Length: 396
Image (cartoon, rainbow, N blue to C red):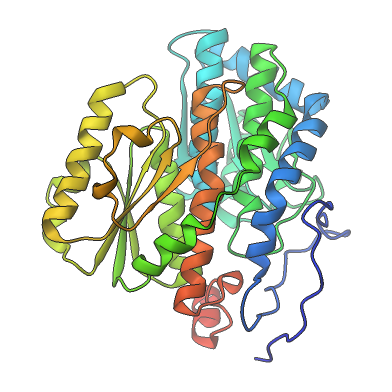
């Protein structure tokens, strides 16, 4: 397959293209010989994109309608389920954490809110409550099937997606549009945008508007190249293990997926406590560890103690360990326990901590993936499908 040799100058402040009109699924990005990859550009675009999207959603009537539907379902004790596949499933789990906290604060403490992988919903649709699909382009087979079955069973349906012209949008009663489409198949914008939509929904549920500029400021921080420094050490590993707890677990799952699809390096996500229950037996000094630690506000010392224990276990085995750690927790984890380095997640008091954890972790985990791709000489944009075998496997 021919490779592109010229890369246009990219403006990270400019809006990204929307979905094609008429709608069609995206084509594989043109492979590039090296960085900047399209993924590189998408990461650079995220701070300004976040401000644009949150500004647009602040007065969006569909956001207000869906927020009212979610509140009504929670108040009636009916289920609220978020669903998706791949990166969109991880974003759906994050949406549950963000929206669920707002519902519990504003409506009922025992709101029935959860997430499910879209395929697992097929054949057993709910006839009540609200099903919210997350699908960046709106063309995912399993997510659309879950929406169709739920709609036909009498459940309310909604979709968070880039455009209201997609097949998935035709199956939803409410469509929250994110407007700008990820240009890389190793999704970054596609992961961040549903979490921003959930943040807008949470703000509407609480009747407390979010400040788009403060979110941009949180994302728009750069201090050296810690991702590059960590990638230099981790790139020599034969596989990675990523751990997280609470709101950090969907981030861990997303990093593991990003590394596998963008770097082609085997990677597994575990709950923080699970790793030491047998899984360490399959690790050695060629296994890299990444711990994501941002969600310690409510669990405090208990979580920090278990995080330190996991890192001590890694040190005993000789595993190079890196951390994606909230800026206000860095002093709680000794530096010598993360010899592969650490990426700081900025914090702000202008957002609920769960939103800080999930949104703030997005760019660091994406930057680590992109730098690992550079170190290992892979193009993350194509998620391996520039290889005819993988292209055939995807279509099999």
